[in-house]
Length: 431
Image 1 (cartoon, rainbow, N blue to C red):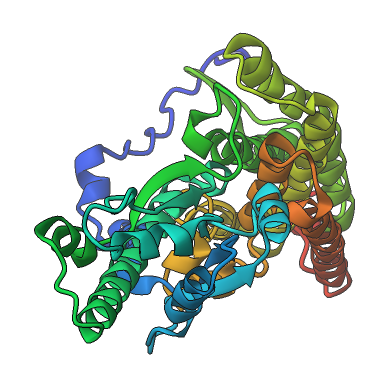
Image 2 (cartoon, one colour):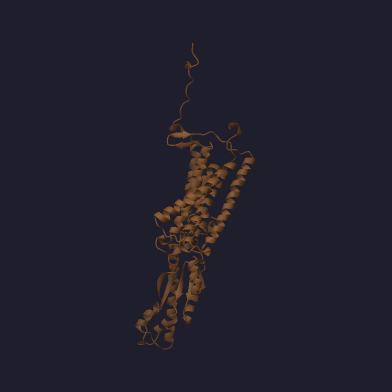
């Protein structure tokens, strides 16, 4: 007679184990991952490549200054001629400025370049057409092309190209005009004069706002901003998964070990509060280690370390809270949605590697609210432009405050609505 401890004489057969071949042979298994991966890959390729295809062709209102220090009329005539030259696509925004105005604009990152005409410009030009044998007949005025490395190496390069093209055309016009005036007096220019008048104006290129060493040719601000954004974004995803595992709403796996904790009855609203609070608190740690690595270990130039640390902490917290809100609203798809918003769409519209004046209009529109644009502008102002408010720092702080408020209202408001409608993460009968 069988006892209670004895196994049953005929135990029920174990259910058949699924195999990879059987699972892969079911087409529903393929549908959702295939569609999502394909769409994500296509959109990522489209977004990233769309912003870098043709910077020169996409140029729109590139800010370049025109400065005349000339005591005579030809300097003013030349820069006004450059400003009035036909530009049907409005690629360049020429700005007539005094030297002091231009320096202030360079120091705040509002100018990418400038053409500066020296004080002796008219005298040097007219000396070219002086009678042969007169002292100084081979003099050639030199115009200064100013760049702004703090605006980014590509921004400076585009500005330099625009300046050189405009200066060459203006130089040839002035040379032709001087040659015509000389011939009108009955004087034939000498061979040396003819050569000089073909292109009488020379140039030299110097920075209008010099950067310190170890600034990566104006790129370190972008990489620091990217690290701040990624620390907030990745931190939010790690925190979200960790909290769900700790509350029993997702399994916790480490290598071969898998653990499912008892589900804690908690609302979506309260869960999001936990995740957002953790993102804000841990932003203190992530921002600190980012600056520790970049400023102390790598020794990047950071003239205002405390301001940069404070800004990085707040920026990382805003990104983390925003990512938590998106994940809470969209569920599993929230990680993909937040990745597009905080990373994929943000990098081309940041205006850091490619200036916004050289990207298509779609990215200029995104830059009005994309967090990466605001954060990179604030970091650049602190690192390169003496933490000036008008260099982008004031706008960055304002946009961070707005972004934080929007993330709180969106995330907490929608999760509260989910709770009131009964959209619980676990059905009451399962709790």
